Amino acid sequence: MKRAESSQSNPNRFRIAIVDSGLDIKHPHFAGLSIDAKDFTQSTCGIYDIWGHGTHHLGVIVSLAKSDTNLLSFIVAKVVDDYGFAPWKLVDAAIRWSLLQKVDVISIGVGAPEATKEFYATVRLATRKTLIVAPVGNDFQNGMGKCLYPARYAEVLGVAGCTAEEKMRDLKGLKDGCDIYIPIKGIDGPLPGNRCECRDGSSTACAYTVGLIVKLITRFRSLVSEIQSANGKDVILMNFRQYYREEVILMNNF
Image 1 (cartoon, one colour):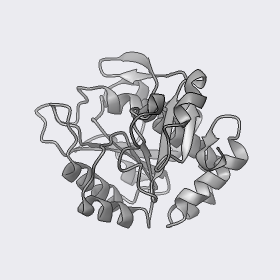
Image 2 (cartoon, one colour):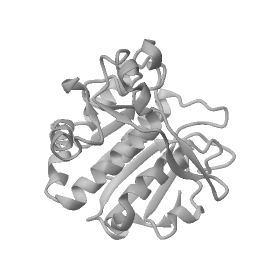
Image 3 (cartoon, rainbow, N blue to C red):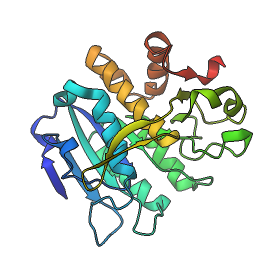
């Protein structure tokens, strides 16, 4: 495990788990942040993010949090291996590890069209204590495909996103599993090697959604205890409906 600063030193921080392709922990975008990290893939690179997906994921959340990062701590679970695959057994182990770290939100950056019963059992266990946010995938665009797991589970907050111009067309392909639609054209975020790139799609929208959740809890600290319950997803949707009507589309209103 590598650390930028141990998040255990301040247990009162709002804790967020990033389950993705790892992290360039030395990127200046993350300087001074409280981050614990663990590699579940046995990669020769350790926690280092060779794909850039996880680095951008956390970077978007940090950018939205801005000056409130001192109220946050992060744990990063690397589940995407050196070949670009994220086996369910690794995602399952990462979720269980996140629960041991007593996180408030688990932000998952990967997905697949099928999942195991064992994985669903882990998701159900986790969502009794914390909120899971996951991308629905991008195959739904142009009215094709289905939402990916774990976003497709009713217990998970499923997020979609692409450009505002594509909004009306693409929503026709979204049914089970999508709770929030973020009509974004792209968001700048860090990449390994001190680089930066503008990305869009559902994974970026997922990170953006977690950033919005951070803004909510820094404004209303009482929401933390509500998120740490089986009703956490409903609590977030209710508050998004009230405070983010101009930024997001709630699918049950469409």
